[in-house]
View 1 (cartoon, rainbow, N blue to C red):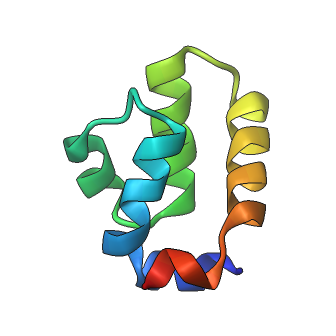
View 2 (tube, rainbow, N blue to C red):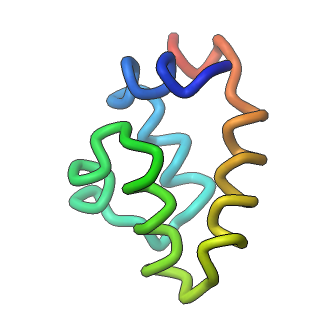
Length: 71
């Protein structure tokens, strides 16, 4: 799954992001609006982690993305 697909279907995928990172609010996800760098920043902010760790978590989440997320 590539990020363009995630971004294009952000409304469906936002729930999956909130499952993964429960501290993200609906407002956070609205601000992110499918932009990867914004999501990484919000993960950093909410969890108090380094940028590298946020990117690592995001890459792992992205690898788990599947077509079933968009149904």
